[in-house]
Length: 242
Image 1 (cartoon, rainbow, N blue to C red):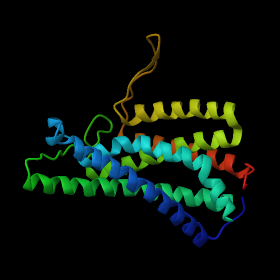
Image 2: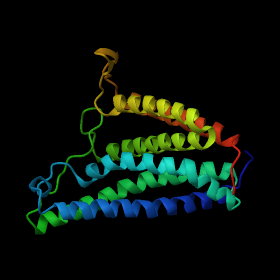
Image 3: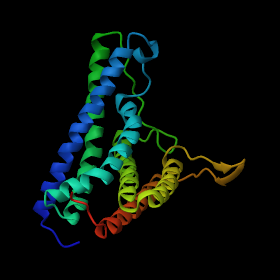
Image 4: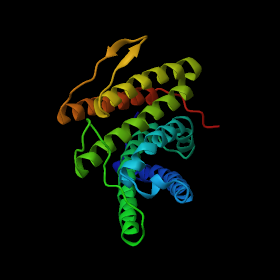
Protein backbone atom coordinates (compact mmCIF):
# COMPACT_ATOMS: atom_id res chain seq x y z
CA UNK A 1 0.00 0.00 0.00
CA UNK A 2 1.41 3.33 -1.07
CA UNK A 3 2.06 6.40 1.08
CA UNK A 4 -0.84 8.70 1.74
CA UNK A 5 -1.63 12.32 2.46
CA UNK A 6 -2.26 12.77 6.20
CA UNK A 7 -5.06 15.25 5.49
CA UNK A 8 -6.75 12.69 3.25
CA UNK A 9 -6.36 10.07 5.98
CA UNK A 10 -8.06 12.36 8.49
CA UNK A 11 -10.91 13.05 6.05
CA UNK A 12 -11.44 9.32 5.54
CA UNK A 13 -11.34 8.79 9.30
CA UNK A 14 -13.93 11.52 9.84
CA UNK A 15 -16.22 10.01 7.19
CA UNK A 16 -16.00 6.54 8.76
CA UNK A 17 -16.39 7.98 12.27
CA UNK A 18 -19.51 9.85 11.15
CA UNK A 19 -21.08 6.58 10.03
CA UNK A 20 -20.11 4.85 13.27
CA UNK A 21 -21.56 7.76 15.22
CA UNK A 22 -24.93 7.35 13.50
CA UNK A 23 -24.99 3.64 14.34
CA UNK A 24 -23.95 4.38 17.92
CA UNK A 25 -26.67 7.01 18.36
CA UNK A 26 -29.29 4.47 17.30
CA UNK A 27 -27.84 1.75 19.55
CA UNK A 28 -27.65 4.00 22.61
CA UNK A 29 -31.13 5.32 21.86
CA UNK A 30 -32.54 1.79 21.83
CA UNK A 31 -30.82 1.04 25.16
CA UNK A 32 -32.20 4.20 26.77
CA UNK A 33 -35.74 3.59 25.52
CA UNK A 34 -35.58 -0.03 26.69
CA UNK A 35 -34.35 1.07 30.12
CA UNK A 36 -37.08 3.70 30.50
CA UNK A 37 -39.80 1.28 29.41
CA UNK A 38 -38.59 -1.36 31.89
CA UNK A 39 -38.10 1.12 34.75
CA UNK A 40 -41.70 1.04 36.10
CA UNK A 41 -41.81 -2.76 36.12
CA UNK A 42 -38.42 -3.72 37.60
CA UNK A 43 -37.63 -2.28 41.02
CA UNK A 44 -33.85 -3.02 40.85
CA UNK A 45 -33.58 -0.61 37.91
CA UNK A 46 -34.81 2.21 40.15
CA UNK A 47 -31.96 1.73 42.62
CA UNK A 48 -28.73 0.99 40.80
CA UNK A 49 -25.34 0.10 42.23
CA UNK A 50 -23.22 0.52 39.09
CA UNK A 51 -22.83 3.76 37.18
CA UNK A 52 -24.33 4.49 33.78
CA UNK A 53 -20.80 4.40 32.38
CA UNK A 54 -20.30 0.85 33.65
CA UNK A 55 -23.72 -0.20 32.37
CA UNK A 56 -22.90 1.15 28.91
CA UNK A 57 -19.49 -0.52 28.80
CA UNK A 58 -20.98 -4.03 28.94
CA UNK A 59 -23.17 -3.94 25.80
CA UNK A 60 -20.51 -1.79 24.11
CA UNK A 61 -18.21 -4.85 24.01
CA UNK A 62 -20.71 -6.77 21.89
CA UNK A 63 -21.70 -3.72 19.85
CA UNK A 64 -18.12 -2.95 18.85
CA UNK A 65 -17.51 -6.53 17.74
CA UNK A 66 -20.65 -6.41 15.61
CA UNK A 67 -19.76 -3.19 13.82
CA UNK A 68 -16.21 -4.51 13.44
CA UNK A 69 -17.62 -7.49 11.54
CA UNK A 70 -19.78 -5.20 9.41
CA UNK A 71 -16.72 -3.07 8.70
CA UNK A 72 -14.72 -6.06 7.54
CA UNK A 73 -17.40 -7.26 5.14
CA UNK A 74 -19.02 -4.11 3.75
CA UNK A 75 -17.29 -0.83 4.61
CA UNK A 76 -13.99 -1.28 2.76
CA UNK A 77 -15.60 -2.20 -0.61
CA UNK A 78 -17.87 0.84 -0.25
CA UNK A 79 -14.97 3.23 0.28
CA UNK A 80 -12.99 1.59 -2.52
CA UNK A 81 -15.85 2.36 -4.90
CA UNK A 82 -15.54 5.99 -3.79
CA UNK A 83 -11.88 6.02 -4.86
CA UNK A 84 -10.34 5.62 -1.38
CA UNK A 85 -7.13 3.56 -1.32
CA UNK A 86 -6.77 0.57 0.97
CA UNK A 87 -4.00 2.37 2.84
CA UNK A 88 -6.18 5.43 3.52
CA UNK A 89 -9.10 3.24 4.51
CA UNK A 90 -7.01 1.16 6.92
CA UNK A 91 -5.42 4.03 8.83
CA UNK A 92 -8.51 6.23 8.61
CA UNK A 93 -10.61 3.44 10.06
CA UNK A 94 -8.17 2.97 12.94
CA UNK A 95 -8.51 6.67 13.77
CA UNK A 96 -12.29 6.34 13.60
CA UNK A 97 -12.24 3.34 15.94
CA UNK A 98 -10.17 5.17 18.55
CA UNK A 99 -12.46 8.19 18.29
CA UNK A 100 -15.50 5.95 18.70
CA UNK A 101 -14.02 4.25 21.78
CA UNK A 102 -13.45 7.68 23.34
CA UNK A 103 -16.95 8.81 22.33
CA UNK A 104 -18.57 5.85 24.07
CA UNK A 105 -16.87 6.89 27.31
CA UNK A 106 -18.10 10.46 26.85
CA UNK A 107 -21.64 9.21 26.23
CA UNK A 108 -21.43 7.07 29.36
CA UNK A 109 -20.24 10.08 31.35
CA UNK A 110 -23.11 12.18 30.00
CA UNK A 111 -25.64 9.50 30.91
CA UNK A 112 -24.18 9.35 34.43
CA UNK A 113 -24.67 13.10 34.84
CA UNK A 114 -28.29 12.72 33.71
CA UNK A 115 -28.75 9.86 36.19
CA UNK A 116 -27.38 12.00 39.04
CA UNK A 117 -29.71 14.82 38.06
CA UNK A 118 -32.65 12.40 38.04
CA UNK A 119 -31.60 11.22 41.50
CA UNK A 120 -31.75 14.78 42.79
CA UNK A 121 -35.34 15.35 41.67
CA UNK A 122 -36.93 11.87 41.71
CA UNK A 123 -36.82 8.69 43.88
CA UNK A 124 -34.42 7.15 41.35
CA UNK A 125 -31.06 6.08 42.84
CA UNK A 126 -28.08 6.43 40.51
CA UNK A 127 -25.21 3.98 40.86
CA UNK A 128 -21.61 5.03 41.44
CA UNK A 129 -19.57 1.89 40.83
CA UNK A 130 -17.25 1.89 37.82
CA UNK A 131 -16.33 -1.00 35.57
CA UNK A 132 -14.10 -3.38 37.53
CA UNK A 133 -10.71 -4.23 36.05
CA UNK A 134 -8.09 -6.43 37.71
CA UNK A 135 -10.70 -7.19 40.36
CA UNK A 136 -10.76 -3.67 41.76
CA UNK A 137 -11.93 -0.10 41.27
CA UNK A 138 -9.06 1.72 39.57
CA UNK A 139 -10.57 5.20 39.60
CA UNK A 140 -12.33 7.14 36.85
CA UNK A 141 -9.35 8.17 34.70
CA UNK A 142 -7.73 4.73 34.65
CA UNK A 143 -11.07 2.99 34.09
CA UNK A 144 -11.82 5.18 31.08
CA UNK A 145 -8.34 4.61 29.63
CA UNK A 146 -8.57 0.84 30.03
CA UNK A 147 -12.10 0.78 28.60
CA UNK A 148 -10.85 2.58 25.48
CA UNK A 149 -8.14 -0.08 25.01
CA UNK A 150 -10.58 -2.96 25.62
CA UNK A 151 -13.22 -1.51 23.29
CA UNK A 152 -10.63 -1.01 20.56
CA UNK A 153 -9.51 -4.61 20.93
CA UNK A 154 -13.13 -5.81 20.71
CA UNK A 155 -13.65 -3.86 17.48
CA UNK A 156 -10.45 -5.28 15.98
CA UNK A 157 -11.65 -8.80 16.84
CA UNK A 158 -14.81 -8.21 14.84
CA UNK A 159 -12.92 -6.52 12.01
CA UNK A 160 -10.59 -9.51 11.70
CA UNK A 161 -13.51 -11.95 11.59
CA UNK A 162 -15.46 -9.92 9.04
CA UNK A 163 -12.51 -9.29 6.76
CA UNK A 164 -11.29 -12.89 7.01
CA UNK A 165 -14.67 -14.11 5.77
CA UNK A 166 -14.55 -11.48 3.00
CA UNK A 167 -11.01 -12.44 2.00
CA UNK A 168 -10.78 -16.19 2.63
CA UNK A 169 -14.41 -17.32 2.85
CA UNK A 170 -15.42 -20.27 5.03
CA UNK A 171 -12.22 -21.93 6.25
CA UNK A 172 -10.27 -18.70 6.68
CA UNK A 173 -13.23 -17.15 8.45
CA UNK A 174 -13.43 -20.14 10.80
CA UNK A 175 -9.73 -19.79 11.65
CA UNK A 176 -10.27 -16.09 12.37
CA UNK A 177 -13.04 -16.99 14.83
CA UNK A 178 -10.72 -19.42 16.62
CA UNK A 179 -7.92 -16.85 16.84
CA UNK A 180 -10.37 -14.21 18.03
CA UNK A 181 -11.68 -16.51 20.76
CA UNK A 182 -8.11 -16.97 21.97
CA UNK A 183 -7.55 -13.20 22.05
CA UNK A 184 -10.91 -12.76 23.79
CA UNK A 185 -9.92 -15.29 26.46
CA UNK A 186 -6.55 -13.61 26.99
CA UNK A 187 -8.18 -10.18 27.32
CA UNK A 188 -10.66 -11.57 29.85
CA UNK A 189 -7.87 -13.10 31.90
CA UNK A 190 -5.86 -9.86 31.74
CA UNK A 191 -8.60 -7.50 32.87
CA UNK A 192 -11.72 -9.07 34.22
CA UNK A 193 -10.40 -10.83 37.35
CA UNK A 194 -8.45 -13.61 35.80
CA UNK A 195 -9.97 -17.03 35.44
CA UNK A 196 -9.45 -20.62 34.45
CA UNK A 197 -9.86 -22.09 30.98
CA UNK A 198 -10.33 -25.84 31.28
CA UNK A 199 -11.27 -28.88 29.22
CA UNK A 200 -12.99 -31.71 31.11
CA UNK A 201 -11.84 -30.21 34.37
CA UNK A 202 -8.17 -29.93 33.36
CA UNK A 203 -7.02 -26.31 33.85
CA UNK A 204 -5.17 -24.84 30.88
CA UNK A 205 -4.75 -21.23 31.98
CA UNK A 206 -4.55 -20.32 35.65
CA UNK A 207 -5.66 -17.04 37.14
CA UNK A 208 -3.08 -14.31 36.67
CA UNK A 209 -2.10 -11.69 39.22
CA UNK A 210 -0.81 -8.85 37.05
CA UNK A 211 0.11 -5.28 37.81
CA UNK A 212 -1.72 -2.51 35.96
CA UNK A 213 1.37 -1.65 33.92
CA UNK A 214 1.93 -5.25 32.84
CA UNK A 215 -1.73 -5.66 31.82
CA UNK A 216 -1.60 -2.45 29.78
CA UNK A 217 1.61 -3.49 28.00
CA UNK A 218 0.21 -6.93 27.17
CA UNK A 219 -2.99 -5.34 25.89
CA UNK A 220 -1.02 -2.95 23.69
CA UNK A 221 0.90 -5.94 22.38
CA UNK A 222 -2.36 -7.66 21.46
CA UNK A 223 -3.55 -4.49 19.71
CA UNK A 224 -0.34 -4.35 17.68
CA UNK A 225 -0.73 -8.03 16.80
CA UNK A 226 -4.32 -7.54 15.65
CA UNK A 227 -3.47 -4.39 13.70
CA UNK A 228 -0.55 -6.09 11.97
CA UNK A 229 -2.70 -9.07 10.98
CA UNK A 230 -5.30 -6.74 9.49
CA UNK A 231 -2.66 -4.69 7.67
CA UNK A 232 -1.17 -7.78 6.06
CA UNK A 233 -4.59 -9.08 5.00
CA UNK A 234 -5.83 -5.78 3.61
CA UNK A 235 -2.72 -4.88 1.62
CA UNK A 236 -2.97 -8.05 -0.51
CA UNK A 237 -6.72 -8.45 -0.78
CA UNK A 238 -8.38 -7.92 -4.18
CA UNK A 239 -11.38 -5.69 -3.61
CA UNK A 240 -14.65 -6.32 -5.40
CA UNK A 241 -15.96 -2.96 -6.54
CA UNK A 242 -19.09 -4.23 -8.30
